[in-house]
Length: 114
Ligand code: 5GP
Ligand code: ZN
Image 1 (cartoon, rainbow, N blue to C red):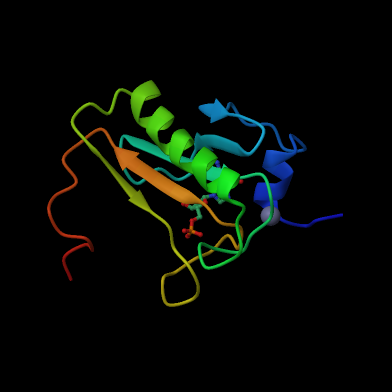
Image 2 (image 1 turned 135 degrees about the vertical axis):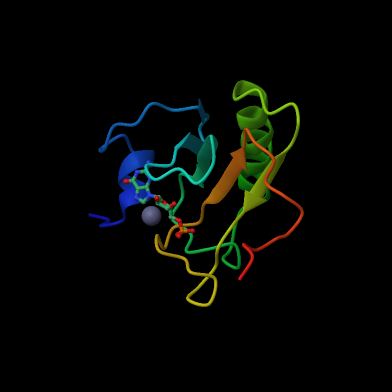
């Protein structure tokens, strides 16, 4: 039994309201949103981060899901996609995911001002 929270969400063991779902990918809102829209796009297969091995069809589904989230959330003015990989990036859930952020001006900087 996998003890990964995103595997459990992907397998519907933990219920979420999907923003988008297909056979490869599920997207759902982050429980601790950092912007008016903050949705996570997650492959159903367990891969630790973006440096792991992914089938081409999974990559295609991830791209489609990110675009669908933008459409379904009405992000006509733009969106930002972030994927943390590893400790220096601050990854906390060790199952690949893309943060889709938007719904306000996120500014031009990639990182918050320090
Ligand atoms: P990371 O820091 O790994 O890039 O991002 C993990 C994200 O997953 C965080 O933004 C956190 O709020 C979110 N998250 C962690 N556990 C859950 C959960 O059980 N449900 C939802 N909806 N989001 C979660
Ligand atoms: Zn997992």
